[in-house]
Image 1 (spheres, one colour):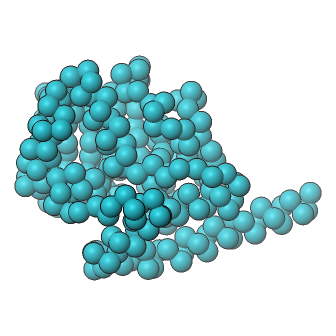
Image 2 (cartoon, one colour):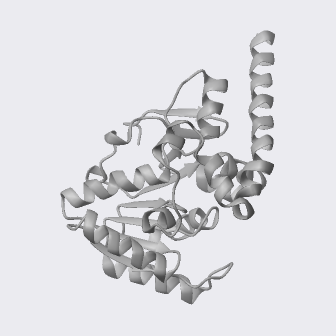
Image 3 (cartoon, rainbow, N blue to C red):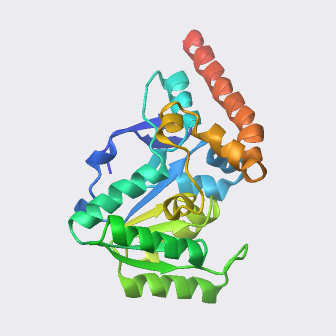
Length: 252
């Protein structure tokens, strides 16, 4: 993956190239794509296995204004946020152009039906498979076998996984060697956004860096901890790291 430009932030190698440089048809090896935001960063600081999963991603996208801001403060680099929704759209356009196939694993059957309905209109050349796993905290071996077999029987070019973090990333990491897919992406809320069961904030708010705020206003019970609690904690981590950088520079 060294053909893409990355930047070291904390313990992670963040993808900072344009998505236009990524073409799934050129992948000769399995590619696992995850995203990093302030929420997943804080969770990973308390969950060593999740941190390992993120660190070992083939591509780790800067999905959040917090990561973009941290990169500016700590590295002096201005980078562009790449959301899971951006990755999803990029891959769908590529798949449609070559009549490729994709599979959606996660969410409810209602959401998956909404995705298929919209894809049929916007990307009619794509062959689509879906599977709604049982709603439970932890899958058993039978659950995992069923999901893996359904995916491999369909034989997609791209697998989209939407089970919320960190469950989705951990599941992919644990089973990636059994999945016969070129590209695997954990994209969480994108399933709801694309099916329109949850409305994503408009481009104005996204371009202003305030997508998080509009989502918080709309879903305060679901998202308050992510932004109100973990936001200040993430800022603390950023400026703690900045202080260490300054002290090390002065000591040298």
